[in-house]
Image (tube, rainbow, N blue to C red):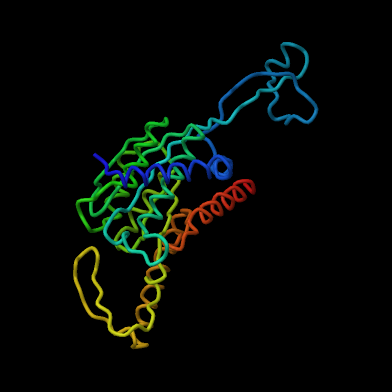
Length: 294
């Protein structure tokens, strides 16, 4: 049984995301993601301006005047949301935590898919896959996905992105649009990432917080690793300590970017400052422009 607070959160996110889909993002999503292919719809008489490559020569020869074949895009896609719910995603010093950002984006993507009659599924993972909702469609199904992504309480604190990606590769046999929403702080996921990108249309949504890239000079600070529980004291007034921390963060970001680019996967960078919906809209538009260029 979900608490009243959780149900209220689900309703709030659902209403906000639905408004965005209806007023702005629904059309952008439709343009950014092509359908599974083309299906034949009809044969009709040729009209000036039609592509001559679509002329049906058999019908043309039979009736004595040019006719063309008309095709329509098969819109139905399968989208799989792969959401990191490990303990590190509960961190956030902005208006949101990384988990909240990922949950709200997942809700928005699910409603975009539903508005286009696409199938939507969910994989929630920590150090193992803890929840799998097989792809389906319909309002009741999308509400279940929203509820799970917003309210699911994981049993493990750790992260194993490689295991989650290999699980997706195994259970989703047909090509799908796969959004991976994670902070990508772990290691050892590179090969699984490349395998998933070869099989699916992979989009990596990296959630970050400013304090993961730079520390302020705040003196002695006790820090706890959210996934291992290890605690230690850091002297943030030491410029050398802050520089090493910033350098390590930059190296992690560069390693992630290298893997994503090498796999030809799309990347969406989002922070905990509340601008994640705008970042997703920008991604849809960039992808649409790239698709139009061929």
